[in-house]
Image (cartoon, rainbow, N blue to C red; front, side):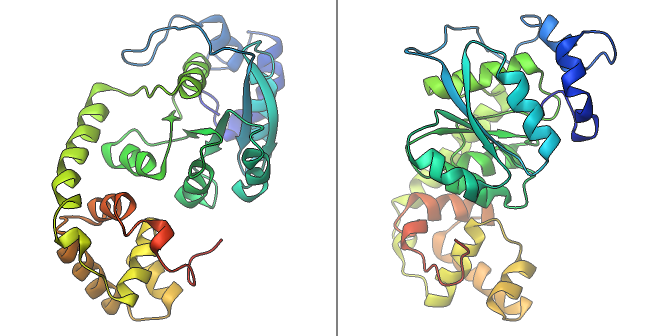
Length: 271
């Protein structure tokens, strides 16, 4: 959990009960609330009416249970539940029983799980354990996050990010915001170009679907049982047709145009 690594998570209960012990314990972070804020963040009133319903998804049990225990002590939140996988979380989310989902990006499902949880309008998703690099945040943004925290994020900042997500606000450092705007400027002209509307071949559509899952060329070759060199050729062709310099840019275009996930063949995409 933010401010508490999975290796140290066995101290969750003690950290909540006392501020003695490790300087980075959750109890210490709770005492310091108000001292550390995300870049440009402001403390704002929580959304009304009622508390925010939070659901936690993580494959690490002690991490998952620690988060639900700590957040459950806040009046601002009601814990709607927790799950080891995004598949187990989806039925609860789809019942409109959740406002904000906290998704551990280190789950085996990675970006795929994040994307599946975020694809519906029922809940906002805050990604946990995100690497605060331009590519890392943009990949999560393209998957549909409403917010994110890194491994060094404090408990106070996590609370703020949950409240931001429930309000529909997105908080990030200026350099990330600038990169997101640059990405929009990059893909905007492409979306309106004839190249973006060029029909990809059936095999290129299959490769494009797997690109959107975040698979590497080697993983795509294994999934489609084709040669690695063949995958590279398909990826090169996709980039050329979409007039995008990188596969990350291509994925952005694919998700924002008529080549979006709902239009791609699902025969090779896990449910």
